[in-house]
Length: 231
Ligand SMILES: [Zn+2]
View (cartoon, rainbow, N blue to C red):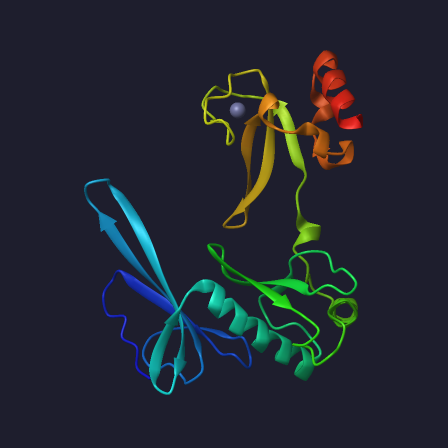
C-alpha cells in the first residue's frame, strides 16, 4: 500500500519480516511489512518537540496499528523463523541478555538509537529447539558482534568536576569535588554517564571489578567505598 509521509514532520521505516531489512518509507510499502513512523510535533507553550510513534503492520493493503509490545511479539515470531531458515541472526538483532538454559532468549532489534524492540524467542517459536543451544551455536559461527552485554561499559567513580550534574536518583545537584558514581549510557554511540550521589546508590550491589576509577580516589574515600563493595 502507499503511505504518504508528505509533511516535513513525519518520517518512517518499514521492516521486511523475511529479511529484516529496514527501508525508509517513501511511497509503496509491501504487504505484511512492519511499519514504524514518527511524527514530530512542536508544542509552542512548553517550547518542546514531542515525537509520536505509530507502530503497525500492513495487512491486506491496510495499516493495522498496534502498540510496540504487540509489534515486538510479531517481530519475535518473524525473528525465530529467520533463525530457523538461515541459521543466523537477522541483521540489527543482538543478544540482549546472557542466554540461560531452558529460558527464552532475549534479543533486541535495534531500529535506531532511539528505538529498540525487545524480542523473546522461546522453544515453541523455534519449533521445539532449545533457544540457548541454537543461539549459542550461531554466536560461535558469526564472527561479528552479536551481543549487547559484552560491550557494556563499567560504571565510573570520580570526584565531581563541577556542581552542575544532577543526581539521577534524588534530582539534586552533586557538589563539585564530592564523590559521584556514574552509570554508563550510550546515546548515538557516544558513551556518557548518568551521575549519582554516593549515598543515592546501593553500592553493595557492585563488585570492585565492575567500577572504574577507584584507584584515582583519595585513600580515605577509596577505602570507605571498597569496604562497602567487599561487604
Ligand atoms: Zn542523590
